Figure 1 (cartoon, protein in one colour):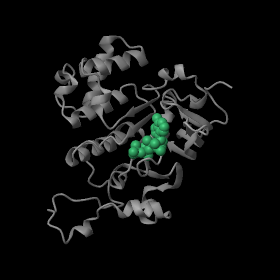
Figure 2: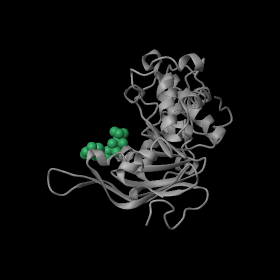
Figure 3: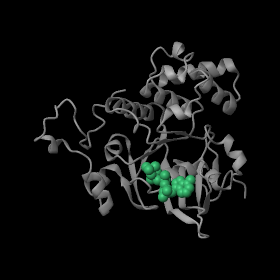
Length: 306
Ligand SMILES: Nc1ncnc2c1ncn2[C@@H]1O[C@H](COP(=O)(O)OP(=O)(O)OP(=O)(O)O)[C@@H](O)[C@H]1O
């Protein structure tokens, strides 16, 4: 069977369907260690799914495997399937794509933004050159066309004075602006799925809020589907439509964000939510009210700005 148009086809609105995914790493003892054990979830068009769980629960390995980035580190997909609807609507069975062909899929049909933009950006090329390179490689555009697209994408992620900033090097950008550049680079080829792996963890709180706002408004503007990896339920409350909770390599609970927060079933999910500071718990503290902590509400979109 070809990796394109895998059977059975996915529902039209589905962008990603992961079924019974199992991933193991080779170990010094002969038995490989299975770190992801039978994980199944899906993401529809325009939807943001948060994959949450404590450190080591398997979130990053799951996300990186969607792009086949873990096999270089010694991982093996031991079972399961990963179906992705690419940019032109074709359904690909990611697990069947030869590894050397994944370069055509990464950055084009699915892109990832990591926690530390400095390690993903090349310090010796300008930001404009780096965005253009991805566009030329994946879309076969001329350099002149790529520059236009790069400029528009930087404007889309609200980088001020984008034309001038294109000519600057990564070290000339602040942490938050670098993360906007990474999001621009990831979006420049209009992938059907954007993966964000702890994209705000390294940023201070105000910048983190701006980046989360940006992701939410981009989702509304361009109907982006996103997989958000985080261990922070505050971030989940900000961005997610649906939530998958991972614990020790297994998905222990999944559901829409309202039910997860209002009626968590699994003890581990309850513990994660309990760890989020609530406005109510601040009454006895000296924290000024202008720094509100997370309070989840069905009205969260009411005041959403860019
Ligand atoms: N290259 C590797 N070789 C062997 N084991 C690995 C490798 N990468 C990850 N693991 C193991 O896989 C498991 C899941 O790790 P993963 O990075 O996915 O966790 P995580 O939930 O993303 O945690 P964190 O938030 O700390 O990144 C861990 O036990 C980890 O030690």
